[in-house]
Image 1 (tube, rainbow, N blue to C red):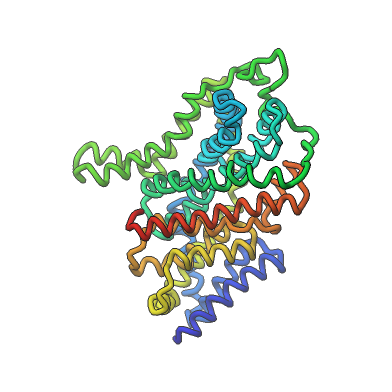
Image 2 (image 1 turned 180 degrees about the vertical axis):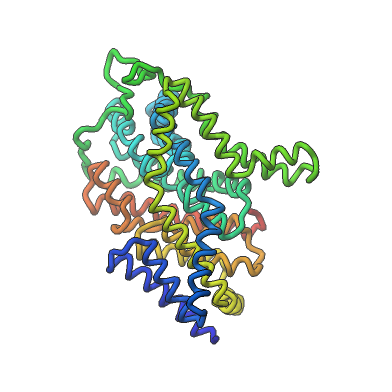
Length: 460
C-alpha cells in the first residue's frame, strides 16, 4: 500500500469518527467502532480479522486500566462524601491569608484533582470558592479560576485519571515516572494558567455577579457565624488534614515506590519484590481504597453498607467512559494489524516530524472537533502509540504528557466543561471564552513547550 493511500484511509477514518459524533450525534463508542470497521476493511483486512482485532485491542486496553480507573472513582467518592476535600480546602485557605488566596486555591485544585475527576472536583470546590470570595472581598473569578485551572491540569497529565491511564498503556510508559513528571509539569502549568492569567484577565472582564445560591462551602461546611468550620451537618467532624492528605497521596506514593524499586533494588531482593508488588497500579489502588474505607469511612461514622453503596454509586458513571476507552484501544489495534501504522511510521521518519508535536497536534485537532478530552487523548494515543513503539528515542512519559496537553486545548463550546464552568461561575459566553477557553489553551501550549524542553535536554 502506498503512503498516500495509508494517510488517506487514516485521515478519512478520523474524519468519519468526528462526523458521526458531532453531526450524527452517535455515542463515541459506536462512532469509533464503526470507524474501526471502516478502517480495517479499507486496509484490506478480512471481515473476521477486522472484528477480532477490535476486540483484542479493546480487551487489552481495558484489561490494563479499567480496574485502576474504577478504584480511582471509589477513592474520589470517599474523599467527596467524607468531607475530606472540604478539609483540604479549608485548611489551605486558613493558612494562606487573603494576599495569597489565588495561589492557595490553585494548590487546593492540584491536591483535590489528584483523586477526583474534574466534574466532581469542580462541583465540590466551587461553593468553597464563592464563600472565600465573599469573606475576603476578592473578585469571585480571581479565586475560582486558579482552582479550575489546577483541576484541569491534573486531569490530562497525572494518573490515575482516565486519559493519562489510556495513553500510559498505549505508549507503554512507566507509571512512577509519569506521576513524577506529570506532577512536576502540572505545577508551572497551573501557575501560568491559574493565578498569573487570572490576575491578568479578571480586571479586564468587567463585573461578573456572584451566582445565586452560592457562597457557602460544599458538603455543608458553613461559613456562617456560630458554626465550627470543621463540622458536617450529620454531627461528625471532618477528617483531619493530615489523614486526608495521606489517603489522597497513598496511591501516588505506592506507585512511585514500585518504580524506584525497579531502578535501585536488586531484581530478586525481598525489598524489590514487595515494593514492585504494592506499587503495581492495581494493587496500589486497591490498598489505597481500603485505606480510604477506614480513614474517610469508618472513622467518619460510615457503615460497611454505606461504603458499599458509595462504591456502587461511584462506578455507575464509568460505563460510558469504559466504552470510549475500549473503542480507542480497538481503533489502535486495527492500525497495527492492518499495517497502516508501519507505513505511517516510515513516512513520519522520512518527513522528520517530531512525535511529540505529531501527538500534540492530533490531540488538539480532535479536541476541537469532538469536544471530549478523553476521546481526543484516547484516539490520538491509539494512532500514535503504534508509531512510537517502532522506536524513536522519545520518552513514553513525555508522549503521554504531550498528548494530554493537546487533548485539553481550546476548551471549545462543544466541551461539556465549557458550559459547566459558564453556569457555575455565572459568566456570559464571551467571558467563558476569555477565561475557560484561554486557560485550556494556555495549559495545552505550556505543556507542549515544557515537554519539548525536557526532550531537548534529554530528560523525561
